[in-house]
Image (cartoon, rainbow, N blue to C red):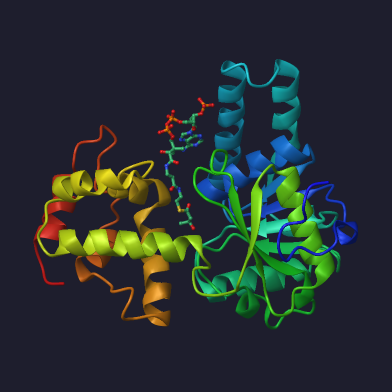
Length: 305
Ligand code: 3HC
């Protein structure tokens, strides 16, 4: 018999998940929609505020299904079934019969609290409300809800289809049935689930940001980006640090950095140059052809830290 993951309640407490809602249709949300549809084979509805974003999100998931088909990983039948399972809706009425709704909207506590409060008006009392937040408190997010006991952190890593770990976060109010449902769902998604404390940035991002913040500091202090990247190579990271920053998104990386700086200011310094780089709206320090973006280089080279 497989051992129960540390801290997971008895699996008998888990409730079935027959329909999933995803709030947001950005890159993370659309990767989540694909994963849930592929692994659970249940209807997955994405919502967003505008039609363009929604169509883009659904389009991304459908495009990834075509890639799986092209690689021979799934049959044409399965590809068609999966595409039919993933749909978009501009209203949350579509979540009325969902058992599990996950939000992946903008990383701002008040925005996420508002999303959860609004969701409570649409879903049943047993429906799990999960958050894919990178660093915010799950307990605070659930505060003020009628049913804080069904809120849980469900934190994935980019690229969602490839990285096996899933951090499951128990808030102070999360009940056993919600946690058991989260673990059973994580297992059905074929992820390796760990229960982590509801602490700023949980565990993975706390470790990763220590490294990333230090590398950014060296560049901020004048080390050229290409030198910092070469110096990091012996660490055996799966990809160079600034490439990873582009994959995660500099704005998200800054947000996690800010959360950790607020909680542990001495250990997580904030670089004003990095903040300026994010404010400039850069997608990364590399351009799509993997050459360095001279404007990004100039931001790190100039100004004050
Ligand atoms: N989306 C979907 N699939 C992807 C992908 C993407 N963005 N990037 C790569 N893949 C797939 C490829 O299609 C390929 O699949 P296949 O075997 O079916 O053909 C497989 O992954 C391997 O890809 P490659 O051979 O092209 O390249 P690598 O072997 O170098 O792997 C990588 C690419 C998996 C992205 C690897 O470089 C890696 O693990 N990088 C580190 C990623 C990481 O640390 N992520 C965590 C970030 S922190 C986070 O997300 C938390 C948040 O809160 C900030």
